[in-house]
Length: 135
Image 1 (cartoon, rainbow, N blue to C red):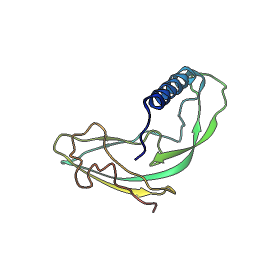
Image 2: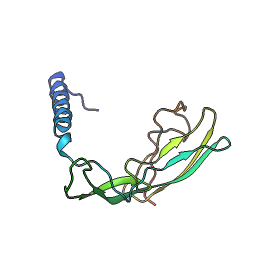
Image 3: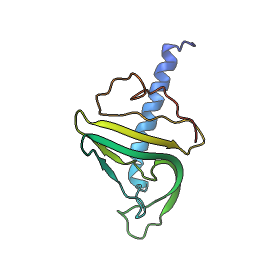
Image 4: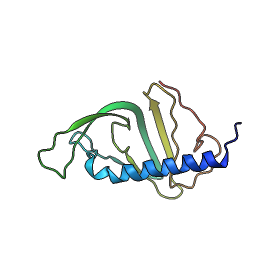
């Protein structure tokens, strides 16, 4: 393991912060991700089970700015879940089981883990180090 000096750490931290702030400043000039072909699907648990298929894949997505009339749409190559940006919304109740069948159509390993759920990081339920290979 390589140690990093305090000065380098502070420089990297300042650079990262500056990059984040600059990206927020220019945000109003960038198109927002939206397309009539993209819809945000919501999956809800039924009878104590939330079961769904997710496909991770690279996809060309049309970006448009709904705030400015006449502005041309642009295409962007993005990583999607089920072709959506952002991915689908999952809704479950406390105590429900969640069953997700993930198909990785990317050309690199991926991972799936939860944000906002109280799931122990043991086994395969929420292992951030678990790699799912392409295919």
